[in-house]
Length: 211
Image (cartoon, rainbow, N blue to C red; front, side, top):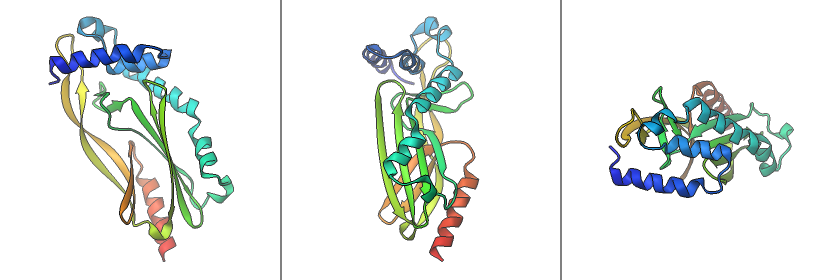
């Protein structure tokens, strides 16, 4: 269980985060750091409300066009197989399990993979729903250097809020990850949902390029 000191520190951080926050950011802050007691329990931001915040944040970022602009190629050059987009909640100090037991955090990543005749282009953006902060990364990989596309699961800790009384519990939860592996390096991102067909298409293309 998160102890009283840890929870007090969360509340203290909340006050600093709320300063200058937008209405959507305030919803995210209140979602991850609800008020203590029954006031917080009954006035909490619902999972669906937070999901709407994430959707709005992603839409405002216009990630697909940003990816194309960063890569600097025309879309017609990136159609060896259809582009793949992966979404996921990254590990963060501000995280929790939802009512149905799934994982949410304030760090939401969107990863676009594009496939030309010779290379795989990767663009990733990690959006912080609690403040005006984002991290971007682009990489280029030659098919000949890629050794594998894979999925795995990581077990991490998140907070679980139940009832009016006491601090939240710490619980272990699994998150799905996708990886693109090259010798001496690996790009990895959180994802969720069934991506088996997309991974299969990538592996088939990689196998074809290496023949």
